[in-house]
Amino acid sequence: MTQYSPRTSRNDEDEGLNWARIAGFTLVVAVHVAALMLLMAPVAPPTIAQEDTDVTRVVIIEPPPPPPPPPPPPPEPPPPQEIRQLAPPQPSPLPPPPEDPPVVFDDPSPIDTPAPPPAPPAPPAAQPDIAGGEVDASTRSQFPIQYPPAAARSGITGTVIVQVTYDASGRITDATIFRSSRNRDLDRAALQGVRRWTVNPGRRNGQAVGGVANVTVDFTL
Image (cartoon, rainbow, N blue to C red; front, side, top):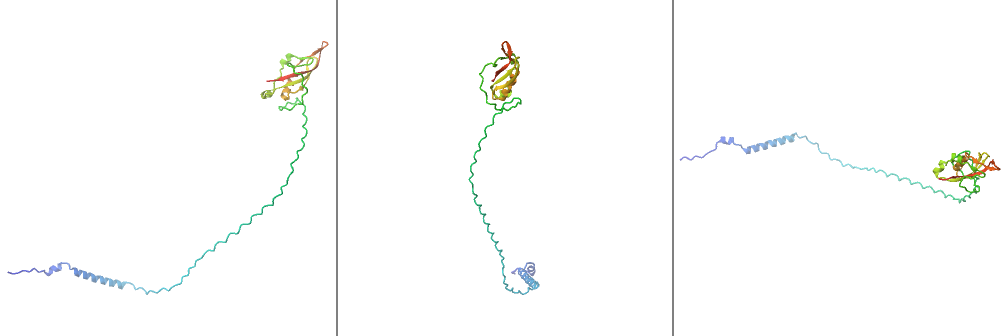
């Protein structure tokens, strides 16, 4: 009997990959490429040793500012002034009070002025008192004495005694303040009112005679 042994043909070897050859070929190519790169690299000049150089470091330090000048000495206090003891002024003697001016009613004024010292009061009477005669009641009612409005608003009251001089016909020829109320408005109103009145004169031996009489006028609220 014939024994058969299988054999690989050459064609089969050629068709497979030979890794050993590939690796060898790659190594050869790499060596050639490295040699070519070394040949193409530039030649570096020889290194010159650097000489040691002494370096001096200069540090500029700004000088400190000069100290400020010392403050000027404080001014000397002024010398104490001598205090003179002044004697208290002596009070000058007061001048004597001026005399009260006489009451004048011709120039009316709203300001009250003090009247002169009153004369001794006449005896009071409920009705106007006329020595030697009496006031005509008709004229007294016809011409009543008006209360001054300013005195009435201020609540001022008082009594005025008017001295009248009348003739034989009973006409009042003169009237003056015999006793003041110390209020100028009341005194003026009494004078103006009484001067418009008439008097029933007294009689002597059956004849009418003139005379002087005091009329009391009361201002009350």
